[in-house]
Amino acid sequence: MKNVPIEYFGFAFAGLNLISGIISLYAHKIDKKIKEKNVLALILIIAVLTYILLANINAGLILALFLPSLYQIDRALITVSISNMINKVTFSHHRATVISIKSFLVNLNQMIFLPIFGIIADQYGLLKSYNILAIFIFIFAGFSLIHFRKLKFEHQCNSFKHQEIDT
Image (cartoon, rainbow, N blue to C red):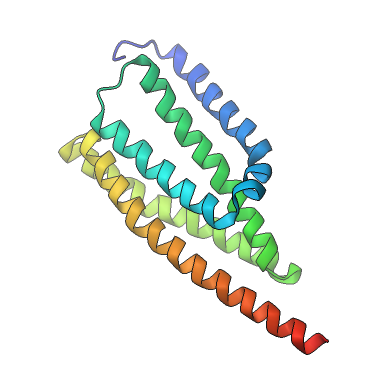
């Protein structure tokens, strides 16, 4: 894999983005079929598993193509699922602000953490940085998932209270 001509990288990235686009088309159906909280858990599992496998398995050609594809599936699911959840729990007059804040936080996280993982990769190697990234994702995404479930429960309770007041 070290001697892959640079011309093939464009095809690889185009293929990976095509996979992400196709999954995005079906993400709404996946969301409905396995429920929101399960989709978030699935996204967490796929992300952590992808980085652990990248770090710890001597990848042949098939696995080297499959693991980035798995990550693209995860990327497509999270984008659509989070947008759906924001649309469901946010009042329409606040939605643009919430979406802007979400976008800001995603980009801020990338700005902060990508250089950190780059430094880790430079000092300890790419495979070690994948392991650290998997641990980091597991801790912070797991915490977010627990917090989301708590918020979801509170939102449902508040919705129920509003329905009682309306009747």
